[in-house]
Each structure stands twice: as structure tokens, then as C-alpha cells.
Amino acid sequence: MARARRRTTILTISIAVVVVAAIGGYLLSRGGWSTATEAIAAEAADSSLAAGGGPTDDVPAVPVEIASVMRRGVAAFHRAASSIEADRLVDVTCRASGRVATVAVEEGDWVEAGQVLATLENDRQRVELRRAELKLAEQVRQLERSEQMLAESLVSEQEHEAVRTAHDQAVAERDLARIALEETRVEAPFAGQITDRAVVIGQMVQATARAFTLADFAPLRVRVHLPEPVAAKVTVGETVMIETEAGSDDIAGRVERISPVVDPATGTVRVTLRLPEGAEARVGGFVKARLTTDRKHDVLAVPKLALVEEGGLRSVFVAAADTVRKVEIETGLYDETHVEVTAGLEEGWEVVTLGRGGLRTGSRIEVLEDSGLSDLAAR
Image 1: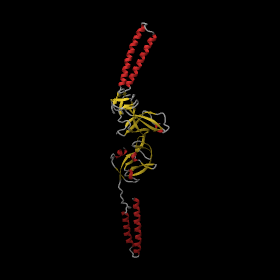
Image 2: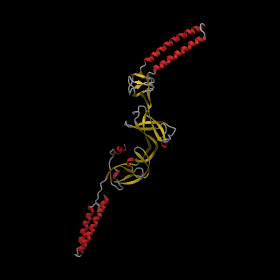
Image 3: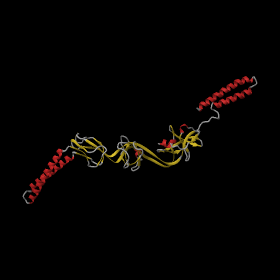
């Protein structure tokens, strides 16, 4: 816009000079050069001012918000995406083949270790167990009689040993029948919550068929894979901020363990994060973990909103009185809201944070009171 004004001004003055020269030549012969020259020059000056090149040009001030360059702590972060995992998440399977007789739990139910979740039809197994118990009872009586007769030398040691062997076999048969009956019951291997039910009453199932999925949510974990240089800066026990898609607040987890090996296929190291008890998060939910990789204290820093990046150069607009000047800077660590300044600024200087889009060196500014827009833009 300014360049167009200058071109218009030059063109207007040129035309005015040509007109003056033409009329001056005419009036020179008539003796009226002085009066005519003054009149035309004044007209040319008025035209120049009207074209925008004169001292009456009034550019409005740009409304901006500013912040002071100050010392503070700045931390560098690495972000990694992953999903939430339960401490244990297993498929509870049937241990025998048969028809489902009962289903005792549903998705979302909390169960205790050993609780019966479902049963298969087990009439045959019950009969087998009863027969084995009766046989064992008979063998117990025969063993007691044989021991009494052995004490009275009425039977030989060899005969008594045969009775004892028959008794032991009856015990084994009873135990096998008891196991067969127990296998018709689907039980929870540990305390947790049912996340899926895969069987219904009347369904025929085979041994090892999945009946339920059971999860133990104490605790929840997140496994992330970090580049080896980043993993080298992480320590066990340090706090990690975890952002969930469903939650409004970040969850403060901690680094539980770091794998001692590097995955040769990806060049990454697996880092396991543990969420605190009672964390509002769902298994399988997508999360973003923010791990601290470096931290500096008491360094010059400016809000990230003040940063102007053009190619490989970084700069800010420094406010002085009612104008600004553009200053190139060198930066260090970045955190969520601020960036470390290693060169180019001094403590106490004020930089433009909002409204810098239309600024140039020398632009007039009008500083606004903090309206909260800086915090909104930072989020």
C-alpha cells in the first residue's frame, strides 16, 4: 500500500512539473512567470498531500498484548502415544466339553478369585464321583480289616500290601472323578471385572473355548516405545503426565520400569508407566504420555506466543514506548508455554504476545490490558 502511494505521488509531481514548464514558457513571454509559478507549485503540493505522501499521513496503532522477559524454569518434553493396559487381562476358558447349564455373571460384574462364573451339564461327572467315593469307602473298610488281621498274624504281609494298593487306587480314582466334576465349572482365576461374556445357556462348547474375558485393573499401565537417546534421559520413578482422550485433567503416572534392551527392528526402548490407584481411565483408551527429558532452572524465557518463526530464523517484537522493533533471538528448551532464550534479549524487556501478525519494525502499537487471550491461545 505504501509503495503504491509513493508511485502515485511521483507521478503527480512529474505531471505538475511538466505543466509548470509548459505554462511557464507561455507566461515568460507575457511577463507573468512569478505569479503563475507560485500558483501551480501550491496546487502540486496540495495534490501530493492528497495522494498520501505528506506529513499528514496518520497510520492507526495496532492493539497488542505484551509480556515481560523474565527468568524461570523451563523443561523439555518428549511425547509418546499409546493405550492403557490392565495389569492382567485374560480369557477364561472352559476346561471340559459340554453344554452350558448356567451363567452366573455378566459384563461389568466384579468377581472374586475362585468364584464360579458358569457351569456345564455335569450329571455324568457327579455319578462318577459318587461311584468312586463308594468304592473308596469299601477299600477303607477292607484296609482296616486287613491291618487288624495282620496284627493277629491272620494274613501275610504280601496280602496286606495288596489290600493297601487297592485302597490307594480307589483314592486316585476318587480324585480323578472330583477333578472331572470341577472342570465342568468355569471359575475366575483372580479377582477382577468381567469385560466380555462369550457363552450363553444351552450352548455346546469345547474344551479351551473362551467363555469370559477377565481384567484386573489394579494397577493400570501404559507401555510406550521411546527412541534410545530419549530413553537414556528417563529414570525409573520419575513423574510422567498422561493425557487421556476422555478425561479433562492429566493423570500423574510414574515410570515403573525400563527395558534393558533396544528393539533392533525399530531402535526403540520399551518404557512401562504405572497409573495411580483410582485413575479415571479405561483399558484400551488412547493416551499421550509427556516425559521430561531435560530441565533448566533460572533461565531467560518468553511465552511461546511471542515467537515468530520464518524459515530457520526465530525472532520477537520488542515493545519500546508506542513502537516495536523486530529482534532475532536464539532459543533453547521448550515447554508447554515458554521457550528459553539464550541470546538476543535482556531481562525486563517486553515482547508482543498477541497482535504481532501485522507488525513491522517501527509499527505503532497500543498496549491492551490482559484479556486472558494469551492463556486461551496457549491451551
